[in-house]
Length: 289
Image (tube, rainbow, N blue to C red; front, side, top):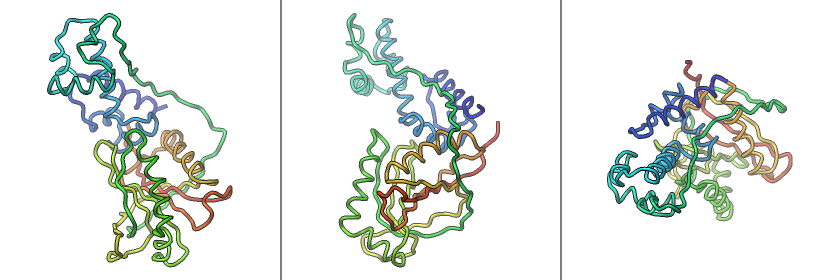
């Protein structure tokens, strides 16, 4: 319940300051959370970033104001954070399908994006096994893809990236570079400040900086929460990811550190009913209220 209250407090903070400049740091502070963890939790639970939620709420309120008052378009644009009528008109048309001026018409059709409310879902019908592992820093070598969470782009691009790497032999090459039949890693790293864009790696644990077409990086020392997914990919692992953010984080004293996270894929049939893979999430104890 503490986590639920903290998230509700953050939503209230957004609404109370919707016409002011809002930084992710102050919104996350209202939830007594680190900015990265708050953004990640928010996106996993709602499907949108904090920034996109604020933008949609502002355009909803701006449309309502234009429809029921005589406020100038310029004043409404400035009130809701747009520096020019042109920028406001572009965003408004994208959200509502009409111009700000047209919103004043009696029969204008407007779209409303309602304020979110987090609800507690009591499940408890299935245990969620995990273990805590502390590891020193290690180096990985692999191929990279820069992708975005906006409009589900990553959910399309990452499977296609795997298909390409499997088809052109990159996955096999990485396994061999790692010492033969070796676990492959799917790594998410370097998420930007808005929580939208990140770099995805298909990699292996190895330090091979001179391999053509491949990159290396160091995964820093961390404490990891490790979860096992059993079943055909990608459904089995997607279900565990959802449970991590919907059930595990809210019910424990941990939060995401903001460092790289990865999935570990053994060299077996990924579509088999008994295929086992792991999710490694870097964690730390959350701030206490």
